[in-house]
Length: 370
Image (cartoon, rainbow, N blue to C red):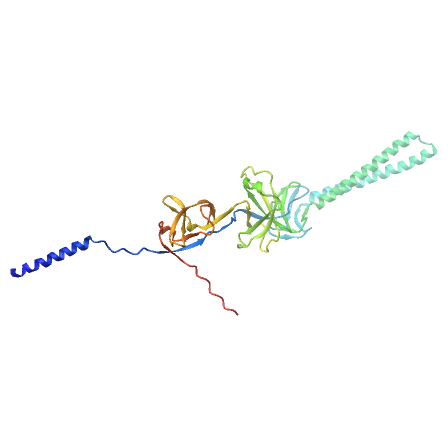
């Protein structure tokens, strides 16, 4: 066996030398990775900046109804949400005391009419005697004064009787206009004072939205200014509205100002009490560059975007000035020029000078005619 070892040594040395040389040589250069990215062309547009505030659908006119006399509620004829016509009966008081007061007034009128008849007869007799000279002029004047006092007293008790009669009619509370019952604050058996609110009636007709706005918007709002109204339960279709009224003083608790917005053509689905949004468009915002949020990233401690150079096929990082966000859009005021192309998808994996391949948005297939 030993006679075969020497011939193998030169072969083993050559193999070791080749391995050493292979380890010292440079590895083959891998081709540079070209990433596919989505881009968008930089354009300048008007910012659709707006402020949206929650509100409630309210009637343009709303009446707080109460009895014109005091008494005990005997019956209630309506419920919240009922539609009523003008003159329809809503509530009734116990009419017993009012009826007794009316009867007393009528009795007083009858008594006064009898007294007036006596004074009238005496006056007529004194008038004839005064013509013949059987009574003095002074005595006739005194009788005339008593007659005129009785006549005035009769008119007074008659007027009081009419008031008592009206009060008996006030025992029934009736609607003063067509509308919808929005609130009830009185129930059968409850004793109420004259003028105490027992029913709230929303008059049929125009609807509006009541909202509250912060003080920074007060200076930019004025009567007649167009706004948009959107029902929370009515989808995304807005309705045209106009500022009808803005409070001149702030609410002491919330420090906001009450706003009333009239709706020009309310949809059929708009009902009293629904929640709505009042959208106030602010046209004072300058023209800004709009970019998707995915384009705005942080790189090496700076915020900006990747700008794509179509000539070289590479990208470079560009710091920009961000002024705000609008939904899923970043608003840029400085750092970009119209016509440049910005990476919107794949920006987080890029490095300066990297070659990229711009993805072309697919076009929608043509719809066959017919």
